[in-house]
Length: 348
Image 1 (cartoon, rainbow, N blue to C red):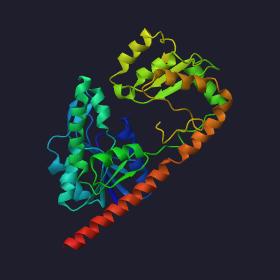
Image 2: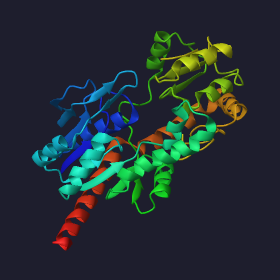
Image 3: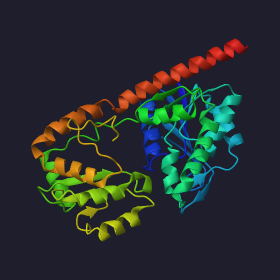
Image 4: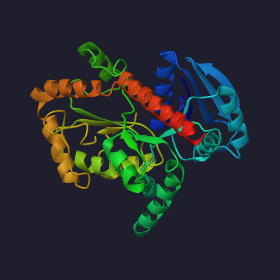
């Protein structure tokens, strides 16, 4: 099968859509599929290369270094030539931004099957904007309109979780939306040996036997990390909070940690679908720092349960292994392509 993956980012960018697109593209290529990945050039300059079996094409773009965004300008003719040369069986867009929008338009002109994965939650984006809270609803509505303008024209769509899929179905009722995990590299992210853990703690200057809580992700307002900092003040048995990530909200979080007297306990460096309290970890009310603190404290003082919780979490992670994600998208592509061929036959 010939698959064109189109989005805003690709590795070495480390945001979620970039990691997902790269992992999927390389997994498909490793199984013998012909794969083309198209993105706006991160530095603005067009280019092409073959990386791990994937043909990667970077389109000329206008780059905002401050926002860390590259945007293609009038890309239709260029992406049209790419589609004609590659002749994909199916096109898979990752967002509703200009490059994906242009690829969708040119694909429709050529009668190609187009599916999309939505990684964008307008409610989260509204939180990032310096606007009064009363304006968030109106902004969210406008942002959903931009999503509908693209995703409402797809053959099929996916979202990384059932929660995200439900949100998309609510906004675009006629769209067939499937929940397909972004996938986990269970070979890379695996339980470490006791010796490896000790070496890592020594390298990061962490207490050898202390309780360390790790957060990995963007440091932006929608992640609600202020609540996690507040919760830490209510969990005295947690020795350190490790924060691995970057984002626009990083400096504000550092200042908040200092004001809370947590500077020595924080360093920079869950959905209910994934976690069942008492089986894989603990859930808490995301609006309640006391509830979050109680959950942290409960886990910190239950060392005898860590092994069992970890083993159950590993089993859950195995359900989201990359191979399963790749297989589900292969089936989705075949379904979309077959549907498009049937429609073309009927129209002719």
